[in-house]
Every structure is written in C-alpha cells, then in structure tokens.
Image (cartoon, rainbow, N blue to C red; front, side, top):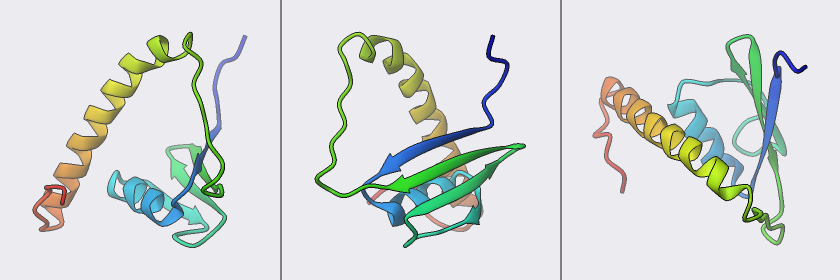
Length: 98
C-alpha cells in the first residue's frame, strides 16, 4: 500500500507563468526558475516540480477521469485563489486579476 508521495511533477507550456503562480502561493524555488526547463519547489518535506513542454504538446483527460478530478480541482482552485489574494494583499498588491 502506498503511504506517501514525496514529489509530484507537472508539465507546463509557460514556465515563467507557472513559477510565478506557485511562488504567489508561497512555494519556495529550490532549483530552476522562470526560464529553466525544470523547476523544483519545496512543499514541506516534499517537492512540487514543473517541467517545460513545447506548445505543440497537448494533454487530454479520459471521460472516466474528469468526474473524479473535477471536485478536487474546484476545491484546489478556490484555495489557490484565496491564498493568492491574501498573499497579494500582504505584499501591498490589489489582489485582483487583470
């Protein structure tokens, strides 16, 4: 039985935008950055990684996966929005998206 996951790697077409997003959520960059092909963030005692992919690379979800993931993504999205807003407010920014 799986007891934990120490790292998750997500693919992105826009590393700079993804790095900015996770920094706004409070993740600490420990390797890579805006223009790197691979970036790693500290997430407590674990890691969140980003790997750059070319624009022509596409992803798809199977119809059986979407219903399972949708509620989790909604909760995560709301949490990310709230955290981003609060962090922006602490940094003296408006917290609104433009």
